[in-house]
Length: 495
Image (cartoon, rainbow, N blue to C red; front, side, top):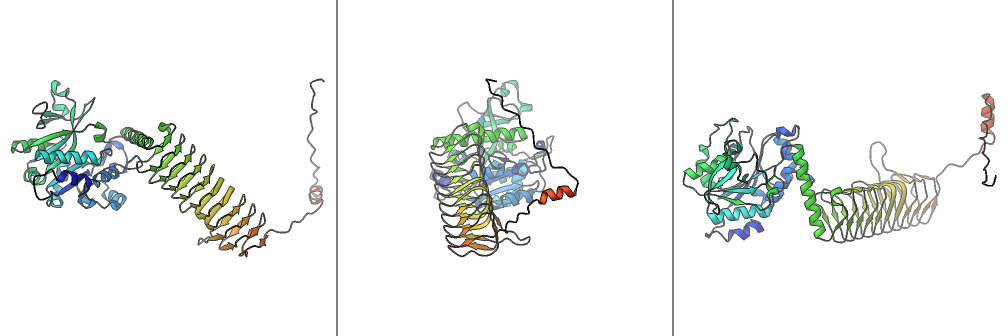
């Protein structure tokens, strides 16, 4: 068990720690989304709905005790989230939430309790899951429901308690069956449960598909267990946003906004300055150090890590990158799976593709692109340059317009530029090639052979001037010399 369930295990009056599993209901198609993508793979906060639920679940129990029950486009779901380490159970025929647990019966039979979560409710926290389980164990219940209070509970099943302050559940009444008085109740059934596994599977066969959709509803277990004289209770979460699912693209957008707003608030409490949080897109797994400033219209995505004392200027997009301390990223830069060492200055408008490694104190300027390139400490590439598959040492100056020609049409090749070298503007380095330590390359050179250290290489063609060539060519075509443009005389004020 993880740290959350370790705390609650001491509450159980038994010498044996109960075995707890988590089942995540993730088999639905999501018809209202009108999408070919499985519902649980739609993204909010920078990753699939189901990935958020798995992340919360695996902080409560080990991944080996988490079971995602999948159905629609099961292979796509498995492929997208197989790296999480959780188990997958196929519900090949989707006949409701109760049917999902029937399908999982064999996998769950060795556990004492099972927590049931919804795969499309990404805001649930491990703390809430653990507190729900704690309450279930304290109450010695057969079934515990998660309740939530909504300002507008329309459409949700209402929880009817046996007494106003008691935890016991009298009934769950669906919206269409609720009386006028019951519709005023604001506590709703969130669709998250904890079951005593023995009691669940001793009575689950009593579920009936006698409803308009001919499905087995897990909600009906509350009435079945109460009729069997088993204890059914409810615990209410303080944050109703945790239980919200997404059935439409509009609801996805609302949840995404909530998650990103909460992420910005969390970062600001940790010492990060975010000038206009509503304009920034920051994914859930991003980490940013104190005293870093995020200007408006910045995107920081994936598993990016940004250190302390940085400044990220507007319109930059950073994905899955490691940015160290005291780094300036100027406007409009794009970094993907890149690394930047302390004190570097990036941009404006530079592009760093996967494998880029920018060294300490290095400068990369406007319209420079790097790919699978290491730029050493204090080196500079300030203008209009492409550096691909390159190893560049310390203190190197790369002039404007330099290109490493890394691709021969079949294979990629490496360019090596050793410490202290100087590459003149408009140089073409045809890989594989090496420029030695302290060497100079003249501007506009095409370098196809290694340059020894402390040497000067010039690889440009000799300039040829053919005097009067244009005049003679024009005369042969019978063309007149172009007239000079008329020049307008400047008129002075005193005129």
